Amino acid sequence: MSSSCVIHKLRGALTKHKHRLGVLLSAFVLVLCLVLLGYKIYGSWAMLRTYEWEIDYVWLLPAFLLFIVQNMITIWVWCLILARFAPSIPFRRHMKIYAWTTLVRRIPAGILWMVAGRTYWYQQLDVPSSATAAGSFLEMAMAIFIGIPIG
Image 1 (cartoon, rainbow, N blue to C red):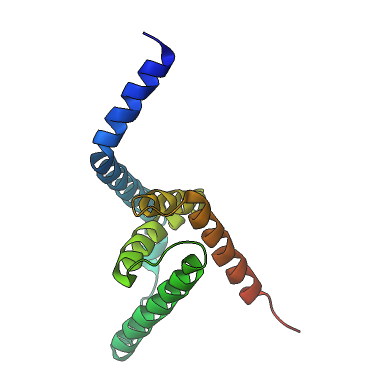
Image 2: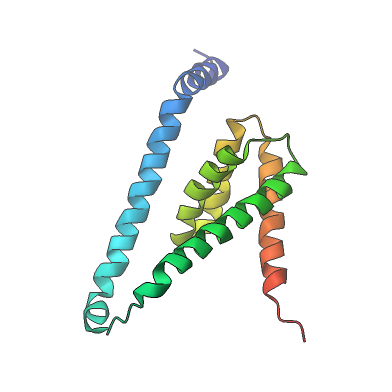
């Protein structure tokens, strides 16, 4: 059996099970994030137990609402960035992809995982990986330049 025949069969198998592979990969990354979060909590447990928590419940709802608004604006900006490189995609689809891939930013080398995740999910929508990578690079560059103090 030639190597091109083996590659062709592997490609066919991957194409056939692409959705299942994506679900398994998503589940793996989610579990990895939860394990790493648990590890961080476990390592900081003594400090967390002795910390004097002062929660002002009056501000919880406004803070949560502002958090939602901030995320909607961030996703809207991401939509505008990606629209420069790729065809139009519904906002709800952007929300789903952005939310899931942003979760992995908290793990080691998270930015790379985030871009890889975005690239994978947008490829399912026929967006070229170069467009997703360019959009992610532009988003990160904007975040860096916005954070530089003027003065």
